[in-house]
Length: 197
Image (cartoon, rainbow, N blue to C red; front, side, top):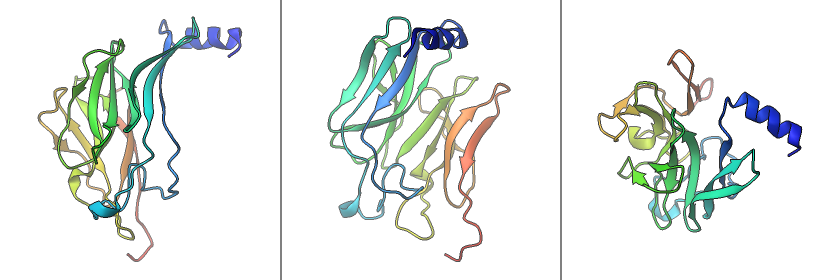
């Protein structure tokens, strides 16, 4: 990056110097709904994005890259930074496991903590202003009407993973929740309209 570009980015970030990123292989399946795996209804045919990923921080001032977490046989996605900038929230399918769960880790790479458990994929987390977490999950037990893959709906939970509640009632997929300045949740939603299942 050119020095003037880094300088402008530092100004826009109001004192923050690091950018959080994930490096992972590109997923070959082109279906919109196959964003965490497909054929989920048949354990013998489950296919996840390719293994091997790392969670890192890029320092705009020093141009240094630091790895926070790496798993050559798993997959990390959807990193979010806590409001105080000390913790990272992300979805992680540990090597050798079949599903994504939500985890937190401090930006120095210590204190890895699993927040969700079970036979479901939990992805797309975001911190809420009240201390809770919003995310999407396949624990709703719904499937795409035209394919053998699970869909995910919007949930919220307390910071420790307790008090989990379903927020949406879509018949297909909700994705990518983001928190607006006034605390409302903005997210994408796949509407299965004008197509006979």
